[in-house]
Image 1 (spheres, one colour):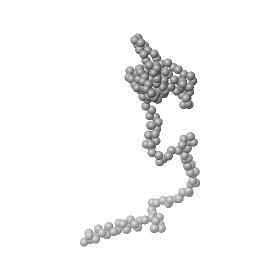
Image 2 (cartoon, rainbow, N blue to C red):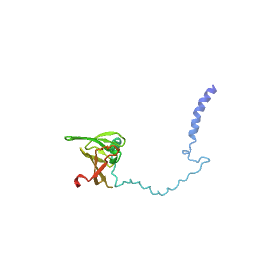
Image 3 (spheres, rainbow, N blue to C red):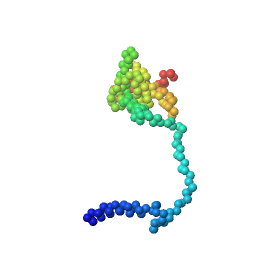
Image 4 (spheres, one colour):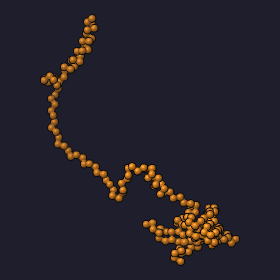
Length: 185
């Protein structure tokens, strides 16, 4: 019976002993502790300066609510300039095989440097200098090329007449002949 009373007594006494050893309530000093001196407060150092946002005056502010996909799509459309097979070479590399003039509709058959034939109409692009076919008649086709300066303004325009190629049996034929633009004749 003594063993049965001893166990609950020990269980109850241990927490009471631990609570009675508290330093704050006894009024006397506990053995082995040092008095803690409070340090004087240090003067506050200067607070770090807030970082200012740098705004470049040349660049407009971006709209945070605009879709990134739409911005990239517009940029890709501006960059997407696909040149056709007639815009690969100088005009002298092309030969006009035939021209058909019927009322206001006119067509020409042009042979390229790759020995392929293309049917062209007025308004089609041709040549490396952004040439545009302006006229098709029974003698050949006229291509207007515009040269631009560094600012992107049109500096000069040149009309080139590509005559119908006629093989005279020796493998030679008539080439391209340059003539002044329509406004300067």
